[in-house]
Structures are given as structure tokens and as C-alpha cells.
Amino acid sequence: MNYDKFHVRCIRDIRFLICIGLLAVMTMVTGFVSHRHVTISVDGQRIELSTPYHVVDNILTQAGVTRNEKDIYKVTADENGDEVIHIRRAVPVVVEYKGEQKELITANATVDDIMIELGYVGNRYKIDKPGETDVVAGMHIKVTDVPVVPVNVVNTPQGSMTYKSHMKMEATAYIPSDGGGSGITATGMVAQHGVIAVDPNVIPLGSRVFIPGYGMAVAADTGGAIRGNRIDLCMNTYREAINFGRGVVEVYILN
Image 1 (cartoon, helix red, strand yellow):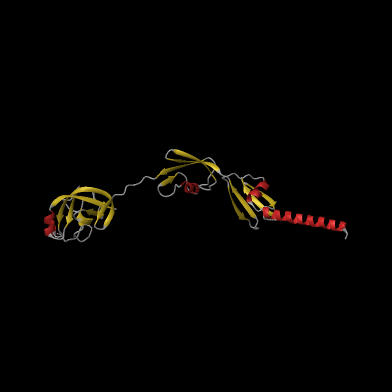
Image 2 (tube, rainbow, N blue to C red):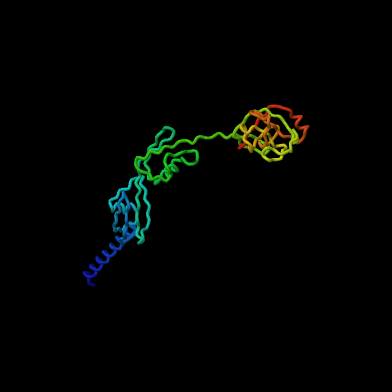
């Protein structure tokens, strides 16, 4: 047996195996053997390079681009199908709420994104900048509470209802035929229980009201003696009107 030839062949085989091993290692580390075209969009520039790497941080290192801890990136494809890496730099922003200023470093794109991150969402907050405003370094955003408008609620036979105003008024009672009337009110409605006469300067005609002890009503009539803080309640019968007589009632003008 020719040992010299055997020795040469062994060395050649070993070199081949070493090459295969190195190729396998490169494949595991980079994910690619062949180079590909990649564009990096960062700091207003576009950097184009050919790279064997698949991992974004490795590609950035090759291009000499430093990505800080809070910088974010997004990978898209251009019209040729080549990879484009977009880097958004985190910038300092100040958010003020109730006199306290919070400084943060953020890569959020818009004011709305920052508000969502911090939990300032919903109608209870007012932001001094439109939500779609682009975030820039040094931006100052002021957040204030929206004043809560108290809601006035009264319980009625139809359930809880909100009202715009409430007053105590002197009330009398009448029936549709009083004064030889036709039973038709000043607004054209038929006079019946649930219709009241008012001074339109105090309670506008057409207003819906609730009067405890009388019920739901509509301000649909007027009267010569009904002036100022006085109302006249229509009753269906003479007996009801006599029983009511005259008294002070609470009037809720409903929304």
C-alpha cells in the first residue's frame, strides 16, 4: 500500500470536512450563506448594503448603525422584494399632568401612542395637542382632567330622569271647561290631566316637567293670572281640582 498517497488523501478529506463544518456553523449563525440586498432607513438616511446576515442586530452592526435600548425597528419589503429596516429613534418627551412633569424616552410615533402607553385615554382627559401629532424630541404634552358636569336625576313614574332645573312654585288647579273655555290650550293641545299652564318667561312652552304628587306634564297652556312663579294644573274633574285647591309644589324641568 502506498502510504504517501493514503496520507495525502486523508489530509484532503480532513480539509473537506473542516470546510463543511465551517459552512454549517456559518449557516447556523447567519441563517444565510449567500449575500442579499438590504436597505436601512435611519436618522433621515438610507443605507444600502449587501449582507449575509439574517438577524437585524447583526445587519445593523455590519452597517455601523447603533440601536439604543428603546429604539424600535420595523421590517418591510420594497418594490423589488428586498428587505427594508426602518429604525425609529427614541426621543425625550415631557408629559405634564396635575402640575407634575414626567420625563420619558419614547419611540412612539404619535401623541396618541404616548397617551395609550401612559393610560391617559377616554373622555375624562384633555390633551393639548391633536392625537395624530408626530412625536419630536423635546415635545411637551399637557394633560388635564375634563370637568365632570353634575347630572341631576329625579325619580319619576317613568323611571329615573335627568332635569335641567328645579324650583318651588305656587300651584292652582283648573278643569278644561273653566271660564267657558273650549278645552283647547294656547298651544293647540287638548286640556287634560298632564297639561299645565305656565308663564312662558319662566317655563318655556313645550317643556316637559315632573311634579311630585301630580305626575308627568307638559307646559302647554297659559293664563291671564299665571305670572311669574305660578302654575295652573289641569285636572280631569271638578272634584280633583277642589281637592287639590292651592299649594306649593316642586317642579322639575326635564331634559
